[in-house]
Image 1: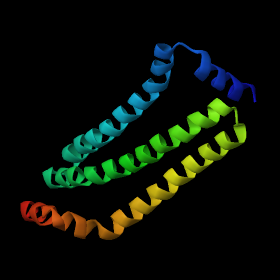
Image 2: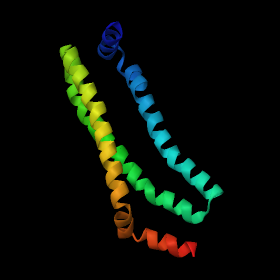
Image 3: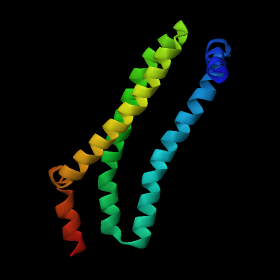
Length: 138
């Protein structure tokens, strides 16, 4: 319980610039990791397999961005309700919001993954990418 109180006290009493840095740096690192993830996929696939496989990895990147965007949408929406609960010192609501936030991100992540697996060929076909990649391979 003391850490929850310390976090609340920090949010309410810390200097705004120091608080902004301490809260934004993990988010910045997370966004860099998401960007590097795709970059490293391209490097390894391009070096170990071939250019066509690298093209397929590039085609899949928008699906990663969709998943990241939905997670960000849920997180930003929850932040408003969460900040009001912190201001009211209502620990029960804070715990519920955090639980719902994690659960919603997991549920939507799974849903987007399943939809992506089911409709990959149709979605990529809309961009005519699979046929172009297959033609390059021959």
